[in-house]
Length: 161
Image 1 (cartoon, rainbow, N blue to C red):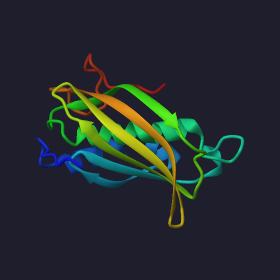
Image 2: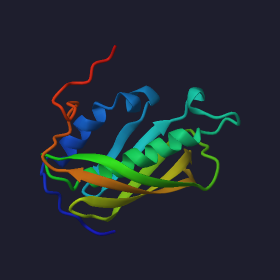
Image 3: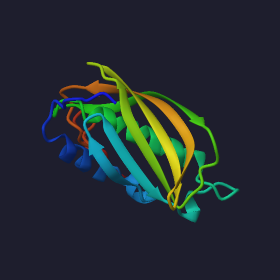
C-alpha cells in the first residue's frame, strides 16, 4: 500500500467529528474502527433490522459502508478547509453479507487534486472468519474552501420540519 502524507495534521479528529455528525451512521450503529492517511475502516454490528428477507445484511447497508469508508479514506488526504462528496461508486456484491459484524476497509487507490478514487472492500465477520462479500470503487470530489459543516451553499443551516 502506498504511504500518504495528509495535508491536515489533525485529519483524524476532523474525520471523527464529521463521522459523529452523520446521524445515519449512528442510526445503523456503525463506528470508525481505524483512521490512517489514505485508509479508513468502519465496523457495523449485525442487527435484524439491517437485514433482507434471507437474514443477510441488506445490500443497501453494504453499499452505505463501502461509500462512507471510501469517502473518509479520501477525506484523510484533503485540506482542513475542504469537504468531501461522492460523485460515483460502483458496488459489486460478491457473496451474501453474513456474520456478526460487517467491516468496510477502504484505501485510496489514486489521490487527486479534485477527484480521488478509493477501493472499498466489505467483509462479514464471524469469529475469526472473514467473508469477502463486496468491493466498490468510489470516486470522491474535494471541495476546497467549503468546510465539512452542516451549512448549505446559500449559508442556511438545514431545518428539519
